[in-house]
Amino acid sequence: MACAGDASQTCGSSYRINIYQYLGTPPNSNGKVVVAHDGFALNVGSSSWQPGQVASAYAAAVGTNFKLFLSFDMTAISCGDAGSANLLRQYINNYANHPNQLYYQGKQVVSTFAGDSCTFGQGDLNNGWNYAVKQGVSSSVMFIPSFFSDPSTFSSNWAQDGDFNWNGGWPMGDYDVNFSSDQSHINAIGGKKFIAALTPMFYTHYGPNSWNKNWIYRSDDWLYNNRWEMLIQNRAQIDIVEVDYGESHYVGWALGPDLAGADAWVTGFDHQGFLVMNKYYADAWRTGTYATITKNQVFLFARPHPKGAVASNDPVGPPNNRDWTDDNLYAVVFAASSANGGSLQLSIGSFSNTFSVSTGVNKFKLSLSPGSPSAILKDSGGATLITFSPSNFNYVNNPTTYNFNYYMAASP
Image (cartoon, rainbow, N blue to C red):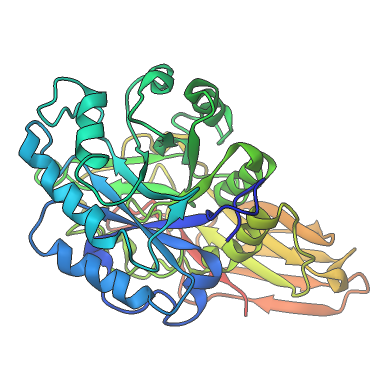
């Protein structure tokens, strides 16, 4: 793994996985995850079963170049008294000398989700975090948290070695993703390390009697592709790119629901196509150069029903912000030279259109209509290169329950 702009450093693209989802299989069990990602950020809370899961993840990585680092979920870990630091220190010390622990510029990388109100009984944030992760540990720690406070304060937070802009991976309103949030964080941290967020989409659907999280963020217009491209364009300012797992962010197969009940909108909604895409972009992130595409491939993704649909049997109700999305079938074509000057015929239900294709990454969209999608890629002479019709996806106008997750399919 090479850090953008500094080939002597160890960093790259990581995948944040909740320890609940880690099922004990090696991270390279089918060869895909290691190729697409450089490591896992292990999202850790305070439950008694989690140390065993963390140990399994580190053990499975042995013998590979796959890196792991700890990210403490401070919404689940108490941090008001000095004794609360013991859990964090124990984790840090346990894996400081592990061969697969991520070190960056000679320091053990440690992150968080939240934690900007923690003091660990030391009177303030800086003394608290310095006490918790930099004292009583056997290594030198690089602390790069995801705090949700004003980023203008981060440069003066002397215990904080960097910033993870958690909400930078998706637009926070009815607009497409951009780099402005990241740039504001980068400008504010005064040369400290920066982790950028990446996601293919955001959807969560828990009711008030559960986790009470029922909303989407706009994930349209090829969010994953466009976000990767802007991160690669700005790679000199970024140290690590991190992809989350929960809230339908998963890239690849779903290892299990992020929280109880998520299987209702995750089961049958594969994201392995995003994992295939990821290698192309991750390689460009590592090297600064996009590889020449040598294999033609078509990717299709869409939601299963209109944004304004009325579900017949959903006790949770429609998600907030659903008006921020569009009813489109999205297509991405990775086109080799054989497809240059050719065309893609894209169809779903009663809608169809034909688009011109050139070598490289092509992005197209078509309004959704009830039915299953199909795509035909032809060369410049009209000969068919790919016929692709995923059979296990069907767009309907009248769903039983709401689901704003993407179904994603990639041609062989």
